[in-house]
Length: 175
Image 1: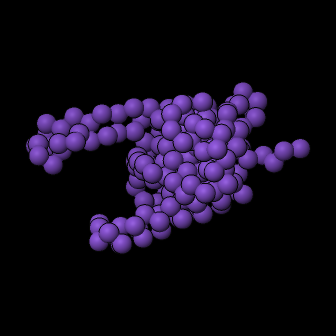
Image 2: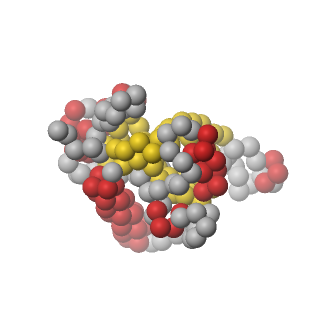
Image 3: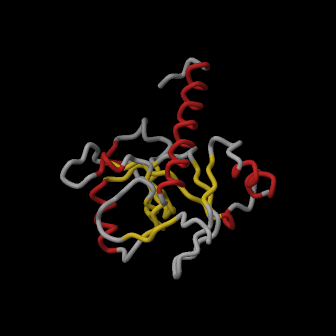
């Protein structure tokens, strides 16, 4: 029997490792610093994302945060260009040799099958926790990473953060 990397959950409790499919994410305009904020038009798109915020910070009634940290997930079939579209690139990511990425196993839960995916730590989003809870309440169910895979994913996210801080410090760009 294969290890169950995913569980199927429902309800409004949002936890680290929850996957929100087709979730809206927003992009400010490039000229945001130069224009009055009332004129700003934000672009948006739907993106599969995974929650990286700590579960203990999102407990309903005892929230320590108001927005959840999210990173995008790409289906293997969506990667048609670049190093990750190659067999070698995917193998390097699977081995953990590409700190900006993490490979998630395929999901074979009935009616929730999902191909191998890549977590992309290079782009970060946030959305209000209240929005994610409302979205959870109107979505019948969602995938959640099981504990072992979740621990490894979080370890990879911390490595990526350290790598970025080291590069910023070395270049004198700590902000």
